[in-house]
Length: 271
Image 1 (cartoon, helix red, strand yellow):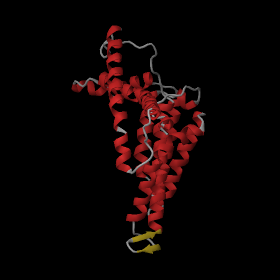
Image 2 (cartoon, rainbow, N blue to C red; image 1 turned 30 degrees about the vertical axis):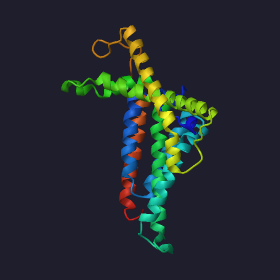
Image 3 (cartoon, rainbow, N blue to C red; image 1 turned 90 degrees about the vertical axis):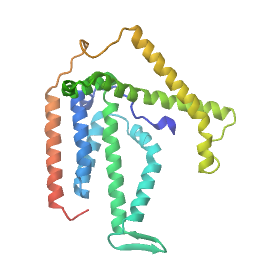
Image 4 (cartoon, helix red, strand yellow; image 1 turned 135 degrees about the horizontal axis):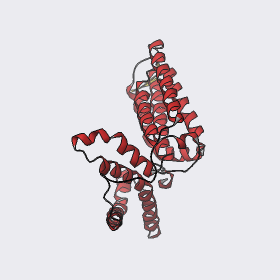
């Protein structure tokens, strides 16, 4: 299951989404995240979910990739669903037994939350799937450049965020190797109660932290040997330029957001 996590990985391609400017993708992703919480009914949420699926299909990535990335998150989604069904008491009662009461309002709300989570994860993942770490660094630095007036080291902040994303797949591979080595020595991570399983993970965390700090030191030495300073005076091999694709993407997002606002108003009393 550890290998199924694909957060932070970049998959090269030539799709229209890959060709968009990194700044455009970051801004549109934030707009999507805002409007996924603005949705107040199934009509608006369905539109935004369909939009995210269309965008994913345009990337030409394998559907198995997304399904694998969702797999480790299923326990969290399942827990969220159960909590929504249990705590939401609005609507008609469908089932009642002792302290457990299930209503149609609770079921609708659970479905609403689950769809929202999956749409949010899908669009957020597409940002790193279709954008290289270098482009992400440059885009974040460009977008946060106004903060330089407040003497904020924007370049260092952008570099830290990008390196963190870049090393997520590396750390996942490291966890998998450590777990395989521990299993070969007789370690058991799957049997026993919850507390026993948590205790069994401690032999993984210690070598993982040691390996992570070692990689950080090696990265620091490598950047120092190359006289990397960053920030002021740093040049770039590729200059970021927005094209008609980016303008068209903003227009499409503006239309979708306008329709969502209309659906929220028109179907105000519908979940």
